[in-house]
Image (cartoon, rainbow, N blue to C red; front, side, top):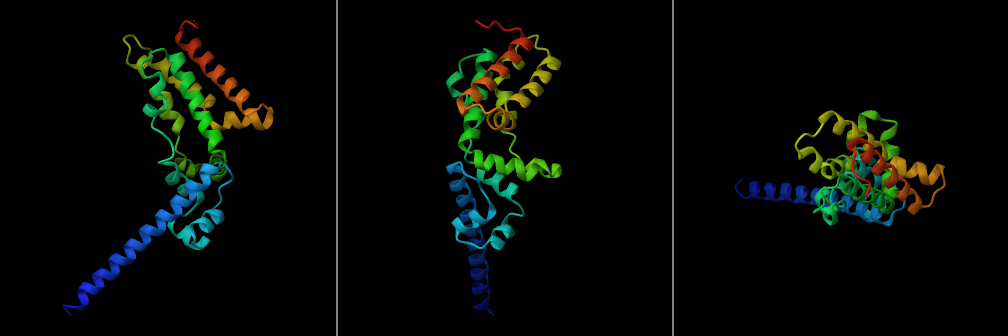
Amino acid sequence: MQETEPKTRQGAKGRTNQKLRTRAAIVSAAAELMRTGHEVTMPEVAKAALVSEATAYRYFPDLASLLRESMADEWPTPEQALRAVADSTDPVVRVAAATEHLLRHVLAYQGATRAMIAATITRPEAAAARPALRIGLIDHALAPVAEAPGADPAALAQLKRDLAVVMSAETLFTLTDLLRLDAEEAIASAVHTATTLTRATLGTDPT
């Protein structure tokens, strides 16, 4: 009995480690596919991870949950994203930088982004799986305004809601897919709208 117990524990530990390696392989495969910008599907992820599709689904119940975990290490923090304008307190400059940063990342990972939208748009209860990166960027971009004396909380809250509509993958895809703008035109249009909203709400000097 004394010899059996250590072997049993070792066997359990080995199975746990194998499960961790399998999970890591699935996440890594999804991240690699995401970086291509192409469509990401569970069958393709399973194939790249050298596991069956059934195995992939045992670790992740749906594509949205897998994409969320795979995206976690692929996107910089808001502080990292806005490092180039860290010394600026001008909300227009900061919002422009945040909008451009977000949309360029959406373009780079558009296959995964489209898959995430498709996986959640018809299942509102699964919307929490979306990383909502725009919210952190908007909050960080407008932090100097929020912290300034005399800030209007109601106006700021409305501006954040307005920007959440503009700073989005859905806006970018509307401009490229429906209005047929090329990527640079689409980004420029979204940045223009976001900065116009910011100036109109905060009354900042366009110069």
